[in-house]
Length: 79
Picture 1 (cartoon, helix red, strand yellow):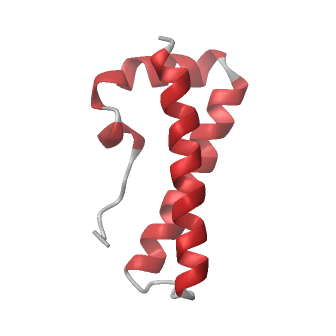
Picture 2 (cartoon, rainbow, N blue to C red):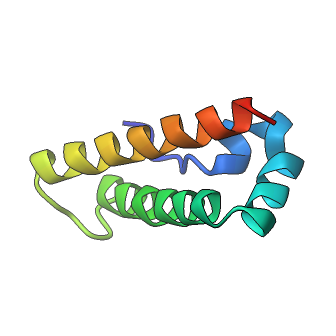
């Protein structure tokens, strides 16, 4: 575990402008990005023991983050 936040701007540095535009015009993308942010923060808080949780719960959050990231990546690939 890295203890480093996986912010979308860090994950997709070449797509920052596209992400801003999609957030502005596409409600589904905006929701995915918001959900990713919330899950990512929860993972980071768990990893740093700010909000400890079971290993299973942390693994589930990481899976959710990965699924959201995959959906975001698919939408960004179309830009």
